[in-house]
Amino acid sequence: MLRSLVAKPHNSQYFIFNLSQKLLHGNGAAQFRARRAFSPCSAAAVSPPSKAIVYEEHGQPDAVTKLVEFPGVQVKENDVCVKMLCAPINPSDINRIQGVYPVRPQPPAVGGYEGVGEVYSVGSAVTSLSLGDWVIPSPPSFGTWQTYIVKDQNVWHKIDKGVSMEYAATITVNPLTALLMLEECVSLNSGDAIVQNGATSMVGQCVIQLAKSQGIRSINIIRDRAGVDEVKETLKNLGADKVFTESELEVKNLKSLLGDIPEPALGFNCVGGNAASLVLKFLRQGGTMVTYGGMSKKPVTVSTSAFIFKELSLRGFWLQKWLSTEKAADSRRMIDKLLGLVQDGKLKYKMELAPFSDFKTSLDKALGKLGSQPKQVIKF
Image 1: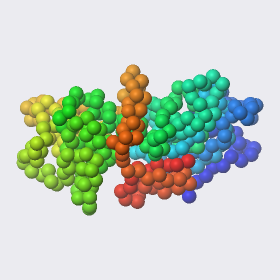
Image 2: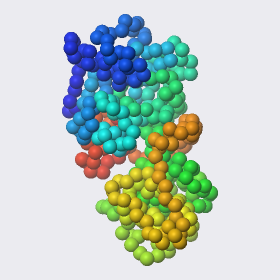
Image 3: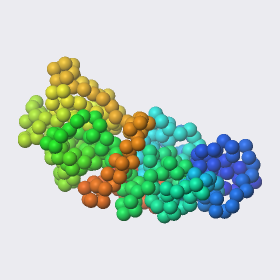
Image 4: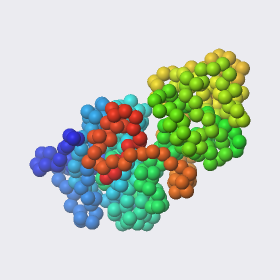
């Protein structure tokens, strides 16, 4: 069971009220901190009471998170109150709670960074959204692990309600990363090829499908594991052209394994160590490897000859940084494109939808305590 902190009268009421203003509303929280009583406002201008997964200090998520219940906050004229429908538990969410992610809110804070919700109420000056609309925070925003969120209307992007809510909730981080890396890093044409490790990850699965939709061939590297044949078949059903385990690539001439696939111009690395070296070995003359993760916690190493004679390039990709540039305005268009592919059945990935009441179990799964598990998505 989650440790819970429930609003009580007298001295604890002030703590919960201030916490709710900081976590639920965000903007203008400072003006409330010094006040000891609720602001007088009509019921129509206040959000419903909310429940949230909060951490008051950095640490291991299963040790520092707890369920907090707090009263509603004022919905100002440009605000939109959103009833959250669902939100995922991403590795970056875990890293933020641990205090090791480069960009993170200061505790106390609500967990979560992406999700989907339904417009519950709007401020008097809001004209772009209506009650019942489905919206996502775009660019993504801290604090999606809660039942109600009040933020400025500009935070929210209206989406088609025909998309399954779990896909809407997870479209902004992993699928967008995959699309951006394919389209922003190297100019690719139909018939070109890419190579990647971590192919079973959500980004890896999206890369396979998005590449296929653009006529780009994919070579995929996975770790050795039990049931590897089934894993290979799953990836090939998504559109993978070639799938190899790391041990299968312990040969002198990797290029002989390509068949009619051209040497890849672009490689993606989310593992590091030997898996990154294998990506580099596949790349063609002048190829580029993009690193967007380091699951093995091992460094990326590259031989001197690869730099000199193959003229390889190495670069990194971080979605958070891209979203902080002027290009971020394009993200909503790209998200709509991705959601269109989902609706057309051209983009899919495995997820597990779990009720908010089972958050502790879902968190344990996301932390790897229960073995390999699909992406955990919390339904509020």
